[in-house]
Length: 510
Image (cartoon, rainbow, N blue to C red; front, side):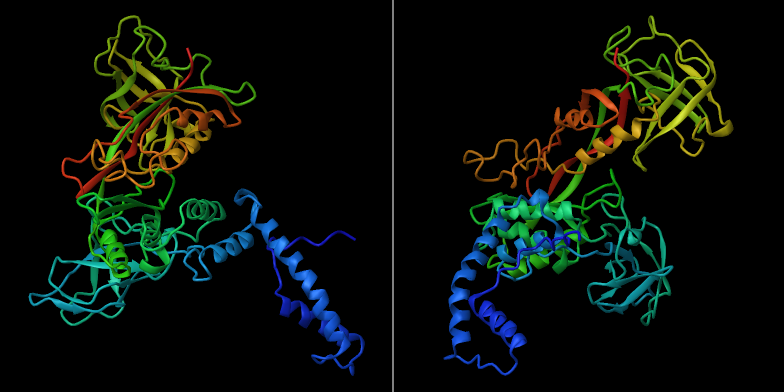
């Protein structure tokens, strides 16, 4: 008979529980037995419990030594309960609906709209988060009552009130936030891997007495304020002794999507955090993007599909003549007719043109994927006018190239590398608020501090190490990240910067 699957959780019993269990099983064997406090069975049960409670505690301690990386969700929840004293502060985050704002559409006198008033997009339900009299054009803060990524809506989407208030029109539109987004932050419940990382952070830096870790735990308490925070970041002493600036990243709707919170979401978090503290010197910091272009050189495993062409084109920017050449898109007519030219500062000297049948890769930043374009014909000596083969799926005809974006050779293995690149970008945090934090970095500096493995703010060789670990890759080199570090704001405390991937090039080695 096979062994039962272990429950994945340590269940230590107290002394009284061991006594009760012993007497219960004694009565199973002899229903009319005297098991009162002065009986022999009770004395035997007490002696046995004195020994077993020691074994229970040993088992609990052994369970605590199981690495988080090996613990299942049940064990993770038990570890969390022990860390937070059973308060539930470290419980797994539930699925959440997107949040943001919609634009009020009212008559000349406005409309008083109440908290929890509902509206819908198809079958997805949202609610208002603040009661107020809104005038026509005012932003109304909202969040999804329905949960999950499907609640994310682009700006301009038309939604319908379930029961319009007097003076309010039946429909409204999703507002565009300062990042160009609509309703964002809808997510599924926290995964075991995400939960492990959060518990690891909590164990490394315990929250207590309104310390920095406690404030970050409030920022990250999505269950309480309703914003799907991925990671909170603070800047202690940013203005003066007891002041603190904060910002956060959101769990992205899809790999590579923006993780910047809107001002509405930051305000919701700030209201909750300040309400839990004895000070109100806490200032939300909006995030802006520092867009970066990353170039990698990848050598595929011989067992993998490799490059689509025997001689991949274009060359790696570290190969060919001149050595620093990169190919980019020139003028664009439509999805299958565009120019290819050399990047600024390069020449066409000694460069070969792409031939008919050359398979090219262009980065679709909106969807976080490479798309294929296959050359059907080419004219010119540089720039080259390209006509793509649109038959039988040889080229993606939905994507229209963007002038000056990188041109890479095509490989069916590109998604393998892309997964790791986006995963790395998805762990990045914001840069510093000041170029040189004071007090040896004890004041004004970002907390948690950027490290190569956790919440880095810069792009470095760690990104090539992740791609190196892909099964289909033999080696990967980071050629360039331009820029490799986010900007520093001119006025600390109002805005911050985080790197976001604008364009990606992956090339064959020389």
